[in-house]
Image (tube, rainbow, N blue to C red):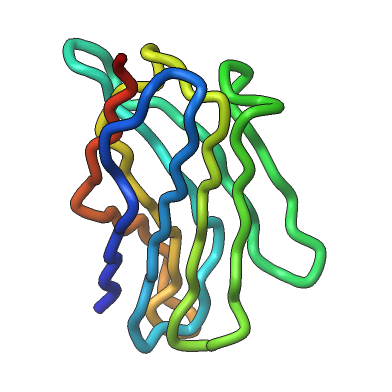
Length: 126
């Protein structure tokens, strides 16, 4: 069983910064990609940023956050991986519920599956 615990949301003024963290834990064969998604009221959930696993991770960002958000990952612990989203120069349009997601393989030979956090609210407003 994989559990994801998110923290760091809140209210911030435009131009401000927030840092989101997500800890994914569980006895799994492997944690694969980890990332952040967001969903604003009345809109579909969208990718914000994702980072792959391994010693040479790949990063992918939504065009709307490139240059402002930075995703990082700590996978030194085999039973807990953490992913952090540093958000700078926040804009009102960044207001949304942010969800952490990991793709993990429970056991060797078993297909990987997606696991989601409970979501954390980010509100950018003056």
